[in-house]
Every structure is written in C-alpha cells, then in structure tokens.
Image (cartoon, rainbow, N blue to C red):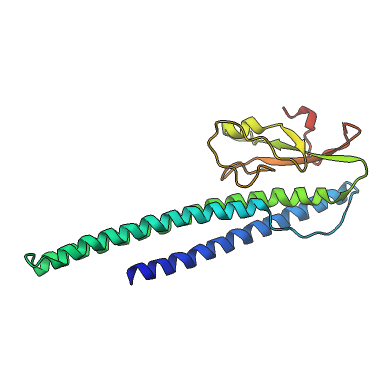
Length: 238
C-alpha cells in the first residue's frame, strides 16, 4: 500500500509539473512574441500573426526532467523496499519484545517521512529550475519566431548573444558566448569543457538555470547591418 500510494502520488505530481512547465514556456513565448511585434511595428516592419509551436527545445527539457524524476522515484522505491525488508525481519523475530518491535517500526516510519520530505523538496527544486529555463527560452523563441515572419526584402536576419555584465561577471560559459553572431536559424556553438547539458539546441538563452543572457536580433542587407533592435551596435559588442 505504501509503495502504491507513493507511486500514485509521484506520477500525478510528475504530470502536473510537466503541464506547468509547458504552460510557463508557452506564456513566456507569447510575451516574447508580443514584445517583438511591438519592436517590429516601431521599426516599420510588417509581421504576420502567428502561433507559437511546440519546439524541440521544450520536448528535450521535459524529457530530461522526466528522467530526473524517474531516477528519483526508482531510488525512493528501493529505499522503501529496503526499509520494510528490515522491518519484516525484526517483526518476525519472536525474541524481541513488543516494545522493541514498535520502536523499530517508529524508526522506519521516521526514516520514510524524512525521505519523502527530501524527495518532494528535490522535485520542487528541479521543477523551479526547469520553469526558470522554460520561461527564458520561451521569451527567446517568441522573439526569434516573430522576426522570422518579418517582411523585409533582401534581409538576412542575424542574432547576437549578450552576457549580462551589469552586476557581477557572468559564468565562464556565458562569457565565452558573449558577442557571438549567427544567422537567426542557426545555433550558437556550445563552449567546450563546460559540462553543462544543452536541452535540444542552443538557439538562444538561457545556457543554464538563472542565466541572465539575452539576444539581440538584427538584419543585414548587402552585408551591412541595416539597424538593430537594441542600443548596442552588433559590431561593437565583442
């Protein structure tokens, strides 16, 4: 019963977390798209209305979160079986007093309670990190999709990765990406040796949870920057 109830709880929580992660991503993408539409209108660009599709990035993020939670569930189930296995041995030992058996049962229950609390806390932490990542990437994807729809003849749309140097220095991984320019449909190169997973692709920020990096999107016409959607000029970013 304990195992069944725990697994039912965990499966339900896992589905709820995944649904909330997707909702966060979609809402952030809509906000990013709306901001980009406003920018485009100020720049005199025509952009056709569009919907945000479910991207490979979101699927990869959800798949990774699923695996982490499945691994946590497996470890916890094994702990339950191990604890109850030891409890059965004690309960079957007729030489032990009733008080000793009760004391052992209370110890098992206490350990189980602690493990449940740690598992729920870990799941909550991972869910928050995934939500943070989903929100920022949704914003980036919303911007990118909007400018892909912009009507600007002969333009080659580019994007530049900007690390945040406002307060503290960014991490070495983000610093290595700062100022890199690629075509709008291309991925940024993942710096070697960082050890950080790339969820699906590296088309834009975030590079990791709580990442403060952002994109600036701009068109080139005839090899020259036509204008930029940011105060910083792309040729002065490095």
